[in-house]
Amino acid sequence: MGIFLFIGVAILSGFLGGKLSHKVKFPSVVGYLIAGLFLGPSFLNFLHPQILDKLVIFGDLALSIIAFIIGSELNFSNLKKLGKSITTIIFSESFFAFFLVTIGVYLLTRKLYLALVLGAIAPASAPAGTAVVLQEYKAKGPLTRALYAVVGFDDGLGIIIFAFASAIAKLIMGGNSKGIIEKAIGGPILEITGSLILGVIFGFLLGFSVRNLRRKGDILTLSLATIFILTGISKSFHFSLILSNLTLGMIFANFFLFANRRVQEVLNSIAPPIYIIFFVIAGAHLNIKLLPAMGLLGLVYVICRTLGLVGGASFGATVTGAPSVIRKYLGWGILSQAGVAIGLAVLVVMEFSPLGSEGKALALTVINTVTATTILFEILGPIGVKYAITKAGETKIS
Image (cartoon, rainbow, N blue to C red; front, side, top):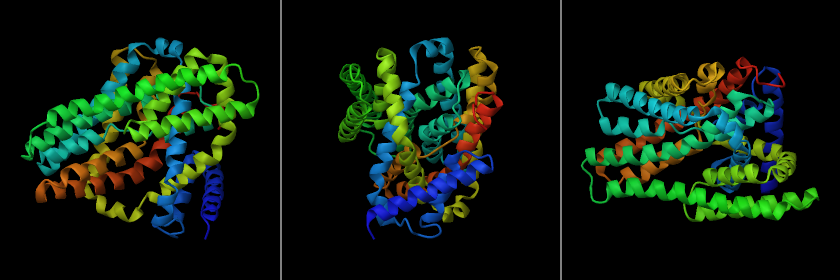
């Protein structure tokens, strides 16, 4: 069957799933994910692994557009109102999650290297789920601005934490220590710096190219071309496509305000089906058979990560005097876990499997635990976002 049949069925199923989800007061994203779960190998196997491999391009496409939209919401003046609280919140929620998961896993397993690796993956969030829910409910307000900022930037810090923690884990396991620390410092710094530089360059290129255009078709064409080229270059150099496109959107929004509004308008007109197929594919990748295998280790990871993110965000907001809605609810809006966490888990498999039987056992434990817990966090995360913005009174539709 042609690939277009699978794409069409995925979009239609996601659309219907989103409508049903909305009827029971859940975000549409939950319906998209559940539709994908039923179409995937866990149930109907309509979207089987070979098809999912061919549809992977939609993941990068959607993430790039979502990252650009998140960046375009990060207005310098709004961030200035939040002040140092955002930086403090990002550091506190990331490190609280890291330390709590590390402590919890160590107390359970008595394996410090395993605890460090799982702890280092815990801060990674999924900006796509959060951003799409904020857009669906037309959320506006201080909590919404804080959520955009936190999910936009905490993955950068998460990558740095992972690099250092995994390097220490290798040293504990007795691996070859030559160059480990240098790689831990140099790799993430290069990835983050390169992503930021690319985003700044392309932000100004897009701004100067689009600011005098009036036709929506021309604006859409140049905008998508810029996002696609930036994404392609980022992937070629192993930079973060999320961070580079987020920086692109941020530069564009702050230096080309009027043009940014027009670009947002045309992108929003084509975004819904892209979002639907992205989350349906994400749902199809979730293997529900892994849930029973999650066991006590997965339960400890889920509880400690949740407490770390919620408690850390509240602590950071409290010590900096952030508004009460941020103190009370921000942590509930950043629970989603997906692509970055899975990517780090795959990296663990690649880097630790060659380190003998102990390394292979660690790699298997990490990839199974993270994949299984992602099923829960992908469903609970969007629900948490809706809960947070509803409690804060920042939604415009119910």
